[in-house]
Image (cartoon, rainbow, N blue to C red; front, side, top):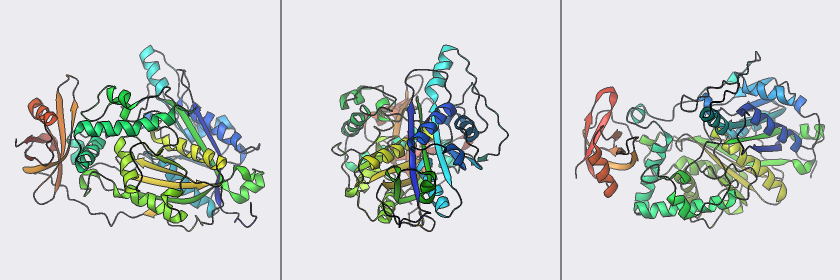
Length: 503
């Protein structure tokens, strides 16, 4: 490799992954530490841990709210939990915001910092042990996962909201509702029936399962055919359990970054160096405000910007991982980049969140680790990772290769503005409108209920749901395609809006 490569060029020099398929008392920070040790070993030299000046840990799901909260305690400083286990004493300990974009977004941040000489050696790590956590709860065990440290922590919090107040007030309490509205809008735009769209989703996801069965770090074993995917437990009128991310995993992944100059100083072999050729990130509008709820234009803008910086087109990418929490997250990127969605081209390097595993906000760290391995095995090729946080809300993409890169990441602009996106206004008190998209789910009593994204005659948007006890409207929507149908809206307390279809 040429000695002309600038010393401040950021590179990935280590990648590690771990999976525990058997239940144990291992905590998430312990898994993250194991992955970190694997990333350090992957560099091929000793003494790396003592050189790490920054440890960044992807925010854990149990620290995000009561749905995932652990009864067994937590670390008050996850980066320090890892530092103690690997023998590091970093100057900076960072606990990231929420979002599946975080691993790729932090690579963007730290690449710029390294290029400017602000950081030397950076460890990015994360994990989830939700399988262990839930098994302990079922079996009445009581592992002690409390860890307390006094070292300084840069806790970046949850991050900005990716939902409107009206969405939350009207039943949008889970990401599955958001993605179902996006999925339904895609179905309608493609002119498919519900059955046809479900079959298309299953066909696409079968190709993901084929990749997962050959991945030694996949949480779930066994191949899932399109028929298996369709016949799994239904979660809504569109989705089955095998169509969406599965968070009941014990998985961890980590990356090690430094500059070319530091790699030379530490003696890391050039065969371990992976260069960054293109990166970009951007924020999408809230779902209610998107002009076309079937797609996220920002997802495509970010991916295209990464390709543009790398001076490549998508056909030049040998390994691709598109974030796959829900089918529409895959297709909104693939279709806008001109990629097939029938399973004829691999759109995942891991096997995807439904089959490889969905370790919370840290999934893309695994995709990045796969990209490092791919680039080393295919030195003339390129690997691309697209990451997504929220409800197609926060996007980040990166392109990697062992070919040297001449991009100055200390100067390169990586943020894609959303100012060009047409934004719809949210109306607080609609009385009439039409259905733009909808989703039907089933309550604990087995009865269906519906949530809709609506639009007034003047183009303003709103979210409403069926009233408690109004089973007939939801059943009618299951039997008929209500897209475009007129609705009447009734305001209720706590800013709730109830709708009925004008049949």
